[in-house]
Length: 375
Ligand SMILES: [Fe+2]
Image (cartoon, rainbow, N blue to C red):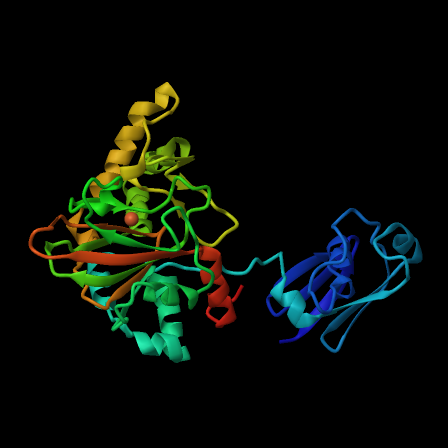
């Protein structure tokens, strides 16, 4: 690609093929690569206004070289006169005139697509074979869910699954935890009742992004797991009623866990715009909703809009139902793929899952490190 440049009043314009990018002198000055510590890769200064006046600007051999004026240097972030150099590939990567594409482009998924994509990966391959591991990362990136099979039935094996992505997210439930029916349970998850579709831990400021459930035993009648792509459901809602979509962005919902000596709460709308990050921010967890605290004039419109979303979530063709088998482990994006389960008969057998959480940051880190994301 033929690359040209043009110096203008407050920066340098680079022309690459049919597109152009502007790099301001203030930005170039702030991002001089000599100001990055070679070992730590961290900036050695804070960003602050500087009189970034170039003395000369050269563009040769795919390299932009700027020699700064003495007076700008004396007021600026360096005490010594110097040149800054910027490699063309580095500029292209950090081109803010043409921001990079989003890291994650979810493929909206209905029940039939979940079925078609159901393809459990052998656990030993997930641990030892890079391509198998990457295929799990890709499934999670695109569809928000992936399955492993033949995971050994050790109580803490699910922690080994989690560590393949990063540090385990410890919570008051413990590093890893049981999901099984227990008498006098303090959480509906630990009963044999139907558990509606939901996300976990929305009463935290930063709910975990990944959840893993390892099936240790599933001999009871009933107890199929249910999953639903909330991105698909909200997309459907937006197409059917932009008014309802907007209402769910305006009205905050309080999520809480007030039981057993704990009092966790967090309040946020069901749909939160997130212009800068890759994923949509949707928060849906009816079992953990506190009484609504909204502006009085918005109460009825909230229930109307939320009821609409709820009706989409209840549509059978949106819900993927799967009875996990012993040794199977489902990994899913907690804030994208809702999970729940059918009621089961605790007298007919046992249903026992082991769960663990990992942060979304750890997952995105693995995507980048494995070359599965461009940014
Ligand atoms: Fe849950």
